[in-house]
Length: 248
Image 1 (tube, rainbow, N blue to C red):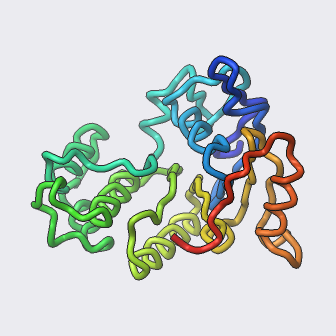
Image 2: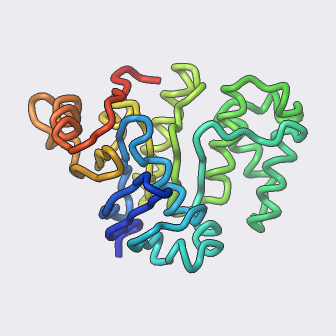
Image 3: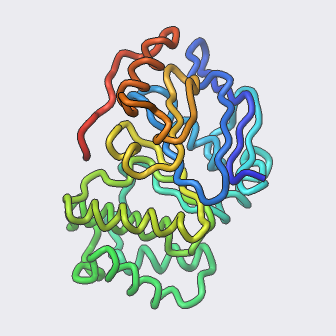
């Protein structure tokens, strides 16, 4: 059974169609990237798959569970990093991650906090109020909370935002190692270079519709950029907002 599978997933808000008949499959161990312009339906897809929003039509399974009928079980089994979400401003990183540990009933949470603080280089601010941290430090804390319970599947919306180039490379290396161990990563981004560099499978979404899904090595001589332009311009009503070609 795939780690993530959707069939005919559709989401409407009145007359607005955010997702239209989205069908995709992500196997165990994949580093899957969902690529598309702003407003193309990437965040809506993740919200449905993580049990935060119900589809209008269609079905989905995440690690064999239904995120609509069993959202709590799904959220307990996965890691989630929404785009631009920060730790509570009134807590320190240590307090926040201890809270995550309590909610998820994680054993040896203090040891895990120390390990992640060293890995993502925020040990020096572990006891600083989150409201006083830089954007990059807050992003590193949020990355830690997504992985600290060692889930088999993690959903990340724009993982490299606010990180300096050196930390971006560290995070990329970890994400590759995570999937090499048999875990699955579902990555949403509008940065083409990130998807092309990291992902073992890329799905291109435009106007709420999945227009292609394939191994980035199969995109041909023009690479992901030419494929993206061809597929998006060829999809009816595709949004005109471009994706970013440069790294974050």
